[in-house]
Amino acid sequence: KQEVTQIPAALSVPEGENLVLNCSFTDSAIYNLQWFRQDPGKGLTSLLLIQSSQREQTSGRLNASLDKSSGRSTLYIAASQPGDSATYLCAVDNTDKLIFGTGTRLQVFP
Amino acid sequence: DTGVSQDPRHKITKRGQNVTFRCDPISEHNRLYWYRQTLGQGPEFLTYFQNEAQLEKSRLLSDRFSAERPKGSFSTLEIQRTEQGDSAMYLCASSSWAPQETQYFGPGTRLLVL
Image 1 (spheres, each protein chain N blue to C red):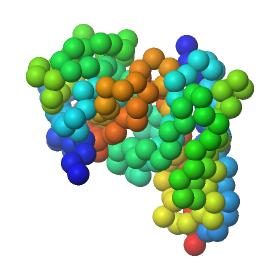
Image 2 (image 1 turned 45 degrees about the horizontal axis):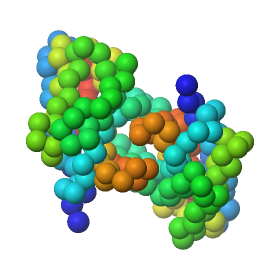
Image 3 (image 1 turned 90 degrees about the vertical axis):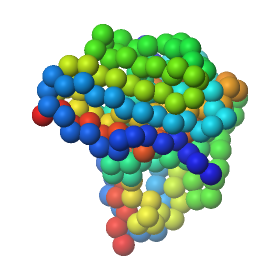
C-alpha cells in the first residue's frame, strides 16, 4: 500500500529565505508525482507535475526534483514571499488516483 | 476559462439527513474524481469515473455514499443518513483521457454534520 509522508509538518520563515520541502513515498512504481498548493478553506492548485521518467521540473521560483529509486521528492522555493504562505501537498499517482501526503503548512512573514 | 465548479460550497445538515453535492468538470475532460479531506489531512480518494462509467471505488465509500455521472458530464455525490464523521471537505477533480495527466481540482464543498 502506497504511503506518502511530508516533512516538516509546519514551517515558519522570514521573507527572502530559500526553502526545501520534503516528500517521501513507499512504492516507487509511480506514474508521476505532483506538488499542489492549498490556501485555507480552498481547493488545490497544481504547481508542478513530474513524470516518472523525469528528474525535475521548474516553474518560476519553484523547482521540484524526483528520485524514484529512493522514493523521494523535494520542492525548492527560492526567495520566499508572504504570498507563498499556504499548505503544500505532495501526491503520487500509481493507479490512476492520487495518494496525498498530509502536507507542509508554510508561513512566510515579512 | 471555466475550471472545475462545485455546488454548494458549504452545507450544514443535521445527523441522519441526506445531502447531495454536484461537480461540473472542465468540459473536455472525461475523467472525474471525488476526494474527501478532513482537517489537517491530505485528500483521500473516494471514487472516479471515465465518461459515465464508475471505474473504482475506495473502501472509504460506505454503502451510504453513492456517486453518479449519468451523461458523462457533471457528477453528483450523495450521502445518505449523514453521520458526524462525514464532516469534511469534499473535493472534485477532472482530467483528460491521456494517462498521467494533471488533475484539476474544484473549490470543494465543506460539509458540517451537527
